[in-house]
Length: 411
Image (cartoon, rainbow, N blue to C red; front, side):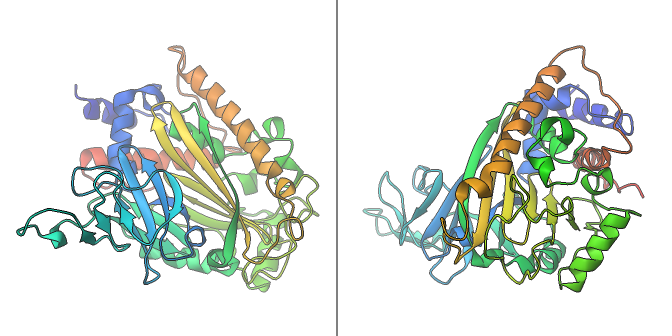
């Protein structure tokens, strides 16, 4: 049986409300199919436009076999390109952020404009057509200041996400924020385990003492986020919407992304060790400190928190079948001054600690699943609705990709 046939068989045999089979978390061939059918075809969150505010600013990242440059052009547009020179394939930019007026290959100095056009190539002969050797483009879109790329030949629809992002996250003004801090950690776990862990707070009271000072692990809030019939959630939504902040649960028809604004524990206004403010200046058009957190996930690679005084973007990229890079970025108002308006340690401590705890949780989960004794277990209907929602999305999406037939979400 081929790898794809075996993978399809395991997906179709999954018991409803249960975790996935062992091979879907461990097998290198199945991982390769994940990369081809999801990571190289879906929109991926890679950062914020405010990270590359000026012409010539770039950020370069690796997604599987693909190295990608995201660049701010002289015209102000944000574009993405494959990080491979059209001469003999050398990388133009090293991973991370940089700034330069042109993109210059370090090997033979082929020089590209920030819009990808080849501007100069030495001694290539009279018949050489520079216009045919521009950098290969990668789909790139911006929504509410968030930068997304897609490596597929044809990108999925984006407009509905862009509209929802502007409605919900737009008031936070990410494009007028600055990056205060950034971390990347490597978790020795399959990417799906990283996302599953994020999509529930069943583990929070035991694993996250700092986070639960402020984040409410009420399963009506920390589960699928709908807060259905929860009076605390209802009161919070009413208050925030009265302050001009769209807040009510909104999920895509295929359940790939979702927005909802949730309350923190009573008295808390930001993710700090005492629940107090993290930054003196509020972001965007947010006018109330106790707006809680706007939660936004987008599968397969991100979950995000938009608060009144700080925005946190979380993104992950698989490194291997059992290894994932997780990047966290903290943004504050562009005019906020470190040491005056915010203390960096205070701003980042809760999630620095929580990320380390989540890494340990995921790695223990992976080591247990590596055992041949592992078999899929049932999800808690009370605590793990969010995990089930993600795994159901993954199962539907991969089944559709492997069969060529669309699979609808259950009502």
